[in-house]
Image 1: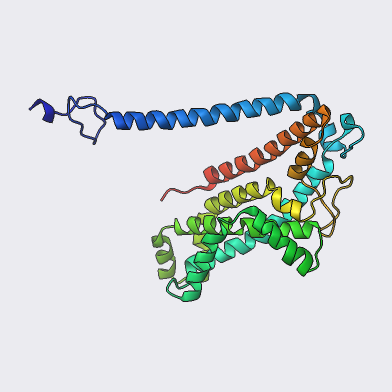
Image 2: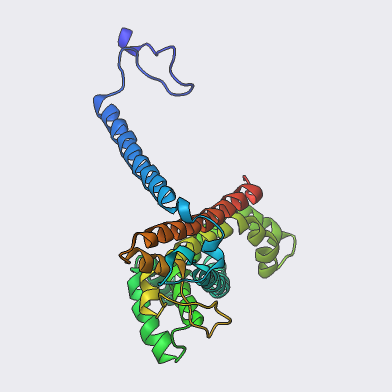
Length: 300
């Protein structure tokens, strides 16, 4: 009878038999999870501390006001790389966000899932999300840069990165739209609104937090890509800022790669300072995503 008596300290609604503790397999599994988490956090913290320590002598205004200089690294900066990153990511957002959101609206609200072409689109989106970034670089080099004749410019880099993150934007936007309860749509249609009015006035405002969060996280991935841009001619030494979509460019990941491959110790501090700048930009974008999610999230 003792084995059938419930413990007094059991959580509400969760019955637990007296005299029977947590199985050793479950304790071992939890310990493994905590150990894995601790190892990852410790290595990440150590890496961040090392980068900040190396970057500290160069974390001043020179890093964003001066241009690269391979002769005198003490006065070199990363202004052209910072501005190139801003140009490329801005046009990437301009190209991929409207396309991805409209594609998500079509697939969730209008597309018939039984049609073969809609099934083909679904499969391709899922597959493209897992394609390595270097493949998109080869595609951008062969089709956009050479095939369309855009050359090694900001436009080519933006279109290539747009293709890279477009599946992520579509998937995140679809999940956000799918999370809106069907009762909202049914109530709007019952009051006489058209399908487009229901989507524009009811569904999209409710899905904005999820779509904004997914879109910003997708752009955060694009801002750290170096492999496709190396194929597209992202130059490692540029002493001017882009002036348009037809300008040559460099970005922070490529500039960091160039500095870290130099033999002189001064370039290590420069590369570390550029890494800190890139991390600040990424953290700012991720913080914006978290703020938008918490500010506009709705609980149904």
